Length: 122
Length: 112
Image 1 (tube, rainbow over the protein chains, first blue to last red):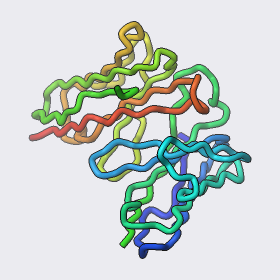
Image 2: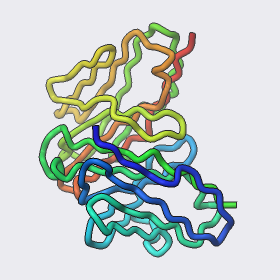
Image 3: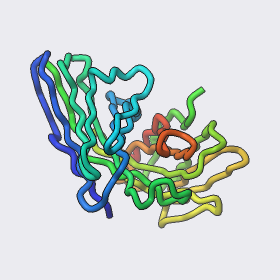
């Protein structure tokens, strides 16, 4: 099946540091990738939709200047948490959908997830 | 009201039990439906897609009722390895690039 690679898997950093997380689709192209945050014992919360070659679309309440998203190619999206603070500590995870499936009204529009990044800000 | 609502759980069942999870969605334009399984601090993994005709994969059966906007997952003969959080996921193509909406998840613990 399709594979999404996410790095790093774990980051521990000091407050004020910026952290970059990469999400790559390894064997398919994705014009759209999604970034989520998950706090302990809570569900995935969509932060933003990353669109290749254009600006990301952010969910209400998510600061676009805080969480910078770049989707420069069909296989790579990055999320940068700028000036991270302890409250940004969370599990961040990306997902992607095969562009060949995108927009098709079929039950094959499933998401492929990266393995997640556990961010701990001290 | 949340777009996708699931049984809050947690469900604690003995091995061999049958357990059912329910999920309702509010967007009538929703087009595709899935159950994902998530283990603690891991990424969600697709368990099965959900079709209008219902579908079965081994011990797992998923049902969709479009009229009631309701999805279910039935697990028969529960195994210890079934312990996880089960996420109901709904796609609606009238939204941003077919955004997927997740339920909060239902936690299942299968005990010996």
